[in-house]
Length: 504
Image (cartoon, rainbow, N blue to C red; front, side):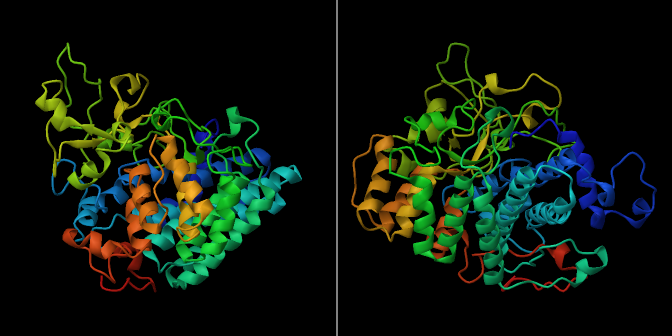
């Protein structure tokens, strides 16, 4: 999100939420110069800092090595984990080949989202007593509930059997928390989102200071997506129809498909008309290796992770001047073949195999190399920051969590893949890239999602929630009844009452 001027205040505040991971010796030191949780939130500025701290966890989508996009890509049929070798990012590698276990699952996918939930719970308790404008307080409360719902949605669809915590709990009680029924978690998600919607603005009126904050449309889109995952298709279609408006037109919330698909990936084209929920990144956080993945870094990590290793080109080459990367998430031959005849290919794939064969560029093949890389997130040398910190940790490309083409296709799916409106929604996505109409069906919608949203981290979830994962991912080692969800990290089970997920 674009709320950076209070960033360093927020990181001091964030210390309030990590006490359970600190030693007793540290906790016994008398704090000096740091605001304590019991006397923080004394005014609107501090409440705003707390809100930004809750938003900050959205960066899990694309920040740090253990980011959602690279991880989810690795487990799908469209990518391998890649990188420098079979042990480069053990968690990602083990998800890609389905050897994932309670030991190899990166703990951050559990505790980062719970950190966001704990921050939200604390802010919701404090906000009623903060002396501030009532309208602002109402909006802060709505945003915080919507963010809590989003973090729970990520947790329940990744791990399924999770604790449901809606208020701050004493440290002494953390180890006694039990898992909730998934349906109870979803009920809380729905409750938070429905309570948030009426108290959010329809659109952002001050893009300079508020871009990235939740609006009615953003939360309705999230609620529609939640309903779709629950199988509540009629409710999903209703919410998503309000978000989408007339297919191909401008929706009541101001959303509209960009005329050119390639413009979605222009790094300067932030918070455009197609963006519904977007994670903001900056090249100005001066992050170094000591910050990376800690929450104190603000760069887009996908950019450096997915580029080819050792990229170079001759002086007279016409090949793009890409910045070298670490070769994670190489594109599979299957996805390459599916995209090759599609107009979105040129915005999605860099064919290094072809560039090398022509002598236009060279690279050092990484693990599971196919020669095909993700162009959507591949920066050029012009995109490399010249500011402080380590350049590779400070890329500024924003990342979409939900965009309008996604909600068009979700609504078409929720409509059962049939009828005039579902056809119009599918047609609008295809017409944007110059493709003709095809008869609408669930299969056509899923095929379109694969191509339209390729490499953006959606494919694995689409396969699992539609029951297709076992067949599509069998060759990768996927086991039905097990790999639809992740194992709970071992550290979260130790000395607690949590129970490991089945078959792990």
